Image 1 (cartoon, rainbow, N blue to C red):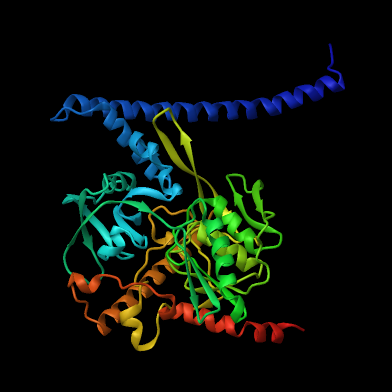
Image 2: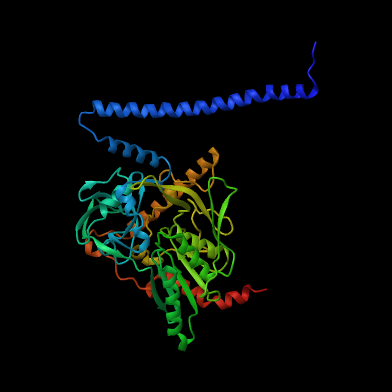
Length: 469
């Protein structure tokens, strides 16, 4: 009788133990592959039934594109299929010049919702407001349409006419707005002095040349105020700024920070992070006191800048909680004419705080107006935030208990916002006359939140002295 040597016995034991594991692993992988093919077969069967039995002829390409759009909609509100028309125009917004109406929109429960109208555009001049729901474009229903389809429909040749059917909180029925499309040239920065020595820089969008515009305005007004003591403070107004280029967010933050992290991104693997550090720059502003203003429509790049300056204690953040859009999208080419916009990561502030569906909470919370003026001046009546969007990503992977708690908190937050809207409605019965809905020309001098920021800057030296041990 032959006996196995000790190494042979060990090899046999390992083989007996590992073989079932390999077999189970291979079986599991094979089952997953089989399941996927079964689902694809199901798709083919349904497509065949539609093509052969639907009472009208259908375009197979349209069916497939519809299926792809549906697949993308199961992910999150910012992932989307980009057809030929959308894909070819995806770069227009970042250049600061494009044809259209001048509104930032999102989608909520299948309905288009206005995040903010851009200053001095047709939509702004016509009186479109944040929170308006667009349910018709040229009398065609947009309920259930994809965000990309609606955006494409709103764009058109400069000078052409378009009608929007708007449902507004507190106004009965559908209001029709008619205006002409224009070539939208967005000036990145609007500057204004308050009290002769406090510079308000209103950044409307993060686009190419935004940093350059901020630097040139600071130089201009510093020279202008030389004889009266120079600039005493800076107010960076990011309210209703929907974001834009990440690179500009990094350079604008770097302008005011000496060193450290501006923002990092966390992808599928939380152990791997891409870090964007403060950039070396010629015209840094490291001494001037800064207040950053944000609100519920400040999103994405705005939140990166606010978070970086807040974590580095370089600026005081004032206003109301931001939108909470802290996810990163990339545009991937599928072929020469089509692509997909896909969420691949989320942003983290220098201290590792997640922005997604959380937003930036200001150091000092200040409403847009106070006292008897609230009914006339409150803009942020019922603004939509990232956490209100269907299928929005959460900052972390939640347990079931955490998910239930979060949903309840978000529900309570929406209830509170609705209560505020109802209180305002009681104070002021809205007049549907269009002329009264048109916005008045903005001036920083009369802006309640700007005035509060100026009050803080006037006390800055005293506060710093008291805070120094």
